[in-house]
Image (cartoon, rainbow, N blue to C red):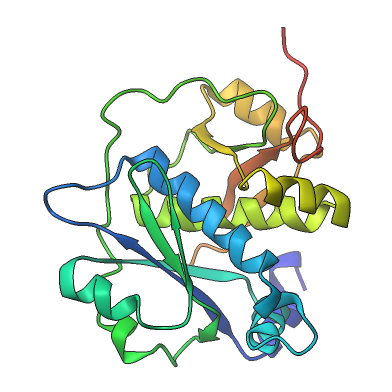
Length: 238
């Protein structure tokens, strides 16, 4: 068998998905970069919540079951009454400068709550009113593959994957420090293919999408650490 023919043991486990909902009001859509960063912070907030980490936490079993399979995340959008209904379900709302994202405990792949299953998932796209500033060197950066075109919803899910890889790479002390800093991070597109190649060849955590939606299988996000928060490696560049 070729490598691609070898069964992935994660596929034998029951499959769960982590739902995220971004608030998308017609008259005040969030900036794209802020939505991506807020989604990543929402994933970290759930992963660090006692309801998901305590032995008897109400979300602990669902999170464990989800992590035993493929780490799926799906971003849907809501406005008005839809957002208010979604906000009544158990979950956590995380806010950015302009974005609001609510993350929910994992649910079976085919067992979404009715308040969420009706929400639109395709075509979620956003713009930045101005180019984002350079990322802060003291905090981690989730670099997006510059060769890929993704809707904002897909990119939010990928940013969430990158944040989760960073979380898994840290010890308890580093996790506590990052949480105390509000899980501050930056999401940026790598400026050019050369930079992206350096990132993916450096040994940094890299998200490799399975190719179920929008894009072909391959690397989507590389994670650099910060000088002060999230002490993962960082490339040295002139």
